[in-house]
Image (cartoon, rainbow, N blue to C red; front, side):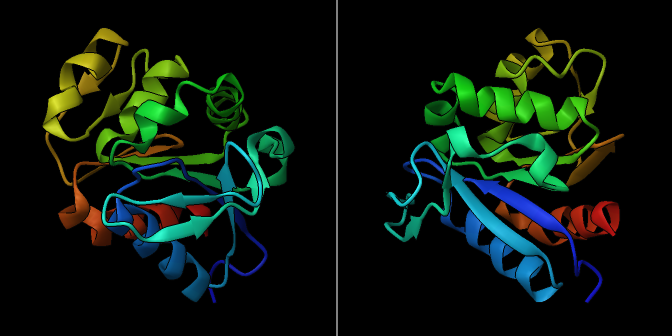
Length: 172
């Protein structure tokens, strides 16, 4: 179990991409990580695009960057809802600044842009938010996974195997 002793936060909000949440959730648990679901409100249930529910273990006010080794942001429409919560954006910024592994897939790049952590970074995402990331100072490339120091990004659910391989390698 290569991630035993590691704690990873996964952010959640309404209309998350079900595959981009559940694949990392179970793959990280399988690798031995302690996975904690962080939503705007702890104990609240959030539904994905396909309707799958997930209950937040902690609310954003109770989650601090120093409590985790890594943070994953799934895509879907959830990142657009997440970035409306200043505490959630601050958590992402703090994790990047503290050198934690921060991984964003698909539309989750919006959270990196809102956290103002993209200046000079090379990233990828779903093509529709490319302009947003470039305007936030990122160098955009179209690759299945991009690792730029402690930020890991991918494009779509098809990239999940490479995305999780990069995350697990960085956390181990």
